[in-house]
Length: 182
Image (cartoon, rainbow, N blue to C red; front, side, top):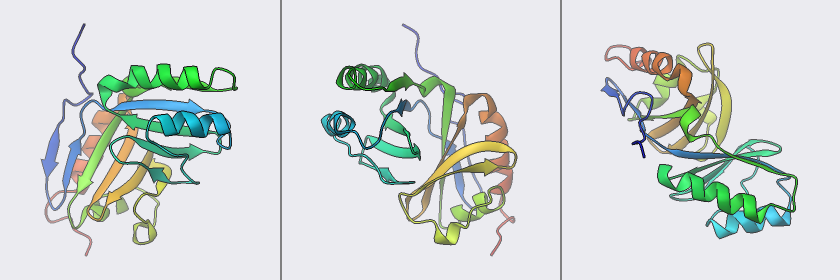
């Protein structure tokens, strides 16, 4: 079996904030009726709950609301296959789609007291009003992304793997020392 390799192999850069590719991350896309009791039970078996609109919930494993009928489950890369198997079995009587998307997406972390300023330059989001644990689907420059505040000084951003190099270049340029906004 081959070893999992992320798009940028964990590349990072530190300026006035630190930007880093997270490496291989397990991600499972789940399309289903989010009000379904079967879905709630399947997520509970994973130690998760159904997140509210635009919310990210959980510790370790995460469930992120992506749309009215879609969740993105985050787990360890090596667990993604089993998460797909478990969710598919639990939802076999429901209209649902469960897909391992780990290898088609890249995750970045932006950390530091001025991490918001990195994304302020790229995304049409009011970061002053973005609470911890709230997911936003938006764009960074002209690339579709999803992002959320994971902690007081940490933001996470997801994009397609095919544009990971471009997105890292945007984040790196936006985080260079001397480029602070405030």
